[in-house]
Amino acid sequence: MAKGDDALARKKNKSNRKKMNRKNDSATVSTRIAAIIAAKKRRQTGKRSMCQGMCFSLPTPEDPFNEKLGKVDIAKKKKKKAKAKTRDALSVNKSLRQAKKPSRLSIGGPPKFLMLCLSDIESSFHQLEKPLFTSTWGIEFWKSFHSGKDVVETSGTSSTLEQIAWIVSTATDAISTREKDEENPLSNSPFLLYLVPSQSKAAQVRSVCKALKRLGVHAVSLHNGAELDHQISGLKSLEPEFLVSTPERLLEIVALKGVDISGVSLLVIDELGSLCASGYLDAVKSIKQAISSEHRSIVFNDSFSASYIPAVQSLLGRSVNRLSLSDSVASQASCIIQTVNVCASEKKKLQKFSEVLDSTTSSRGINIVAKEESFRKLTALLKLKGLSVVIANSEPTIIPAITKRGGQLAYLIDIEQFDSTGMNNFETVLLPDFVPSFQTYVEILTSMARDSVRGVLHSFVTEEEDVSGLAGSLVNVLEDCGQCVPDSWRNLSASMSD
Image (cartoon, rainbow, N blue to C red; front, side):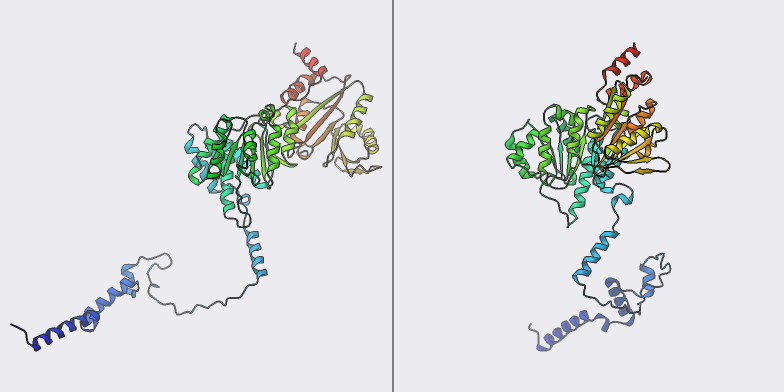
């Protein structure tokens, strides 16, 4: 049966009322129900009244009773007027921010990221005797790296796992810092170049670098055991941050433009004695000259022989930091040339002393440690050589030269009163009157030229002087340091041992 028009109209009106009720529920319901609906909407939007805040919010130390919750702060915030800054003002503010920024050395210790690198390496090697972060050598190396000086390692051995770990971790931390520096961005060259004498040493270094692969650091090893084309293609596709190579293979790849090393920031030369013995010194020098950017160099000299000292001097700067795992006399005296001049008489000794003065040139001056009674004749000789004399005692006295020798100074120091703590900067030391004891000689040797690899120690003695009590010990020191030993002293030491 068809519905009438009235039934259809009632049905339509009913549906319209339902739609209106859904749009505005609070308009047709009771006051209590409307309040519940409004509270629900406030909860959903995050706006609550005071009583609701007590129910749904936890107290805080600043507001333990939730008294501030829901209250509107009627205090209006003052709007700061934005001032247009000129380009000069922006540059000044930037320089002030950089000046206020503390350096890592002022903080007092290595950063957390470097510790993370060391931790990753520790997890890869389980035969370590002690944690890497406790290494005194590593801390000193990190400080030397950030001081900007070159480093010479004087232990007389190849680099250890501990030392390699600190070197690559410091380099990784430096890379992460440079990536954030817009003024000094990283170049396309490898950051670290590690020169080794053999494939086995390259494998050891690369095994340590592999532990840092998780941090995005890639290392490539180049040596004669692999195909040249394969290594070049790998370099171009990977673009490694660390490059471990033998000198001859690296020069071949550089000549073929397989890698650019002009932007290397850290150069490590391991087992310099072995490289020199194998005839690779010229190759190492060529590689260093190919690095055009400002970089730091580290040399591990695995030999105490004096014949390798010129090689060390050619690879390092004027001022260096000395690091060593050993505190032996040979280690502390590394890169110091010791010369013992045995003369027939006092006259011959003074003549030899004069010849050494003529051949000695040092920007830091010549330091003469002698007996006080010898000062008069030494002062006269030094003035004739054009040297200004400084008598270093309780009241320093300067005696100007007759004709100046380029402003060079000669310091006269009483051997009975000298202080070894003040000899750190002495590069050239002459002993015209031989030392009274073996301990004095060792003290002078191990305290001079602490920031240089150009130390020279000349000793003068006559055949008439009785050095039988010192000959044996001094011969042992000279031999341990790879220095030339006078035949007369060697014979004397042999006769005493018999």
